[in-house]
Amino acid sequence: MTPNHNTGQPDPNQRQRLLWAVALSAAVLIVFDGLSMMMFGRHVMSGVITPPMPKPAIEQVVAPVEESAGSGILVKLENPALQAEVALTGGRIEQVLLKRYAEKLGAEKGYQLFANDVAHAERIVSGWQGAGIEGPSANTPWQLEADVNGEGKPLVMVWRNGTGQSFQREIKPIADSYMMEITERVVNGAALPVTLTPFAQVERMGGSLPNEHSSWVNFLGPMGVVQGADGKMVTHQQGFDTLKKGQFIKQEGTGGWWGITSQYFMAAILPDAGVAGQSERELRHDVVAGKDRFTARVAWQPMVVQAGGSAALTYQVYMGPKQEAQLQRAGHELERAIEWGWFVMIAKPLYHVLVWLHAYLGNWGLAVIAITLLLKIVTFPLANKSYHAMARMKKLQPKIEKLKERLGDDQQAMAVEMMKIYREEKVNPLSGCWPMLIQIPIFFAMYKVVLVAFEFRHAPLALWVQDMSLPDPWFVLPVLMGVSMWAQFKLNPPPTDPTQAAVFAWMPAMMTVMFLWFPSGLVLYWLTNNVLSVAQQWWIMRADKAI
Image 1 (tube, rainbow, N blue to C red):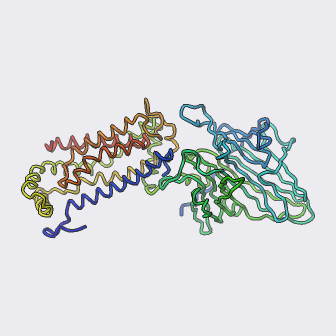
Image 2 (spheres, rainbow, N blue to C red):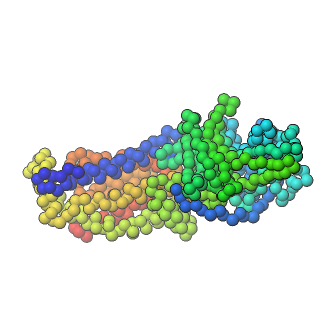
């Protein structure tokens, strides 16, 4: 920062320019993501090892089988949370329906997690691979175990190859959760030992789902968490476009999870921790029948099955919402699928306070208003001091106007005289900037909370705002936010620099346009914050007789 050569003090105008440059740079970054939503349809913005969660009780329901084009026979498995259809062709988990969530606002309950359209088909495939041995794969014709399947029992399938090995797959929905437990077994009836490698993978055709694209603020796509040799859990992610360029990810480790995420939902393979979960993980891309296929693959350690012997492997899969409570309940570090961003130390506490407030208020909009009020109370002493300083500066405006008339365009002389006035009146010209600097990280943190928190999906505020994760359809909140910002600027002492004055004059209009495309929950926070700030600043300035 360049000092004023006549006083040796930093030029207050330069410091104000620097602060506004920081604020405007932050705004530009957010605008970038806002524009990405306008163009693409939606925002696309070493840890501690969590001990394994105890396995909950298992609930199994097998419904009658039915034919499906392309998948052969389908068998339904369900619990109170989800319904999955398992294709006997390949033993694949397909067409998962989440019973408690709707596809669209106002629609009946039932969210199709794995897309029905061929362009974005998604499924979970598993099998065994071995040198010179045919193992079950994506198109193996499995058969039901007639003496095993039935009401209250797991789905059990069998398949036998031509070289003496028989394979069994057992799938159990876990009670009242979005998880299934899968057990793979092999019996070697041949005269020689065989070596087989079990694998499981989440596949998606086409890449990003319609109206969902990753950005620097929110990653969507193939990712996972794995415990490395040093004992630390590490997150890995690779975008669809990057995978298409051949930049695959391959890691070895244990525990964690490996899958594909979208804005609010995900599907993942959950290997056990410890030696049993030691596996090789891959995020990769290939082309099948002329279509892009993206795969999150887990391959366990090869198993040597002696002649007449058997081997088995058990793991779980998660197919459900990216809601922190559900993810933590499932364990395996699944909560790392939520991207809290750079301000995680602020965003996560804000999220938990919002959840706590919602438990009492019953409305996420009221929770946003309440947390804004709490934040204003916490920052009240600093803001109070700053507003008192701004009130004193506003009372100095007549003296500053006389200086401008006397000195004209001599900015250097103007800075010297202004610093002299500030010293005489014991006013700090930068003290009014502290509230703005404090609000920037809080704003970014709230932006992340509204963007990634599952709870804001289809969460109504009132009247016309029925989904706080989407922009206000009538643009009422952004316009009110712009009016509140204009009122706040009117209370501030006007800048002496003409350029700064012009920026201030246009700032409310620019911010209004920018906020048109922001989630209404975030606009509500900023509007509430502005209204409370205007009220506090007006009261202080009136008490100090600055207005």
